[in-house]
Image (cartoon, rainbow, N blue to C red):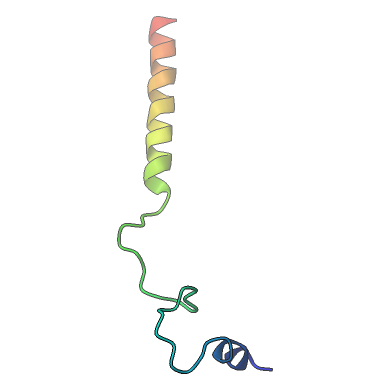
Length: 57
């Protein structure tokens, strides 16, 4: 059984409800950014902590 056959048989022909389990790749969410902004903030906070520890210590 090919993968196309498997997914084509689980929904009726004239279904009125929208697909609740979308299959395949859809458009990317533009609000979704990578994790690099989080890492930049973490590194900056660590640098501030280290600098303050050196200056005040």
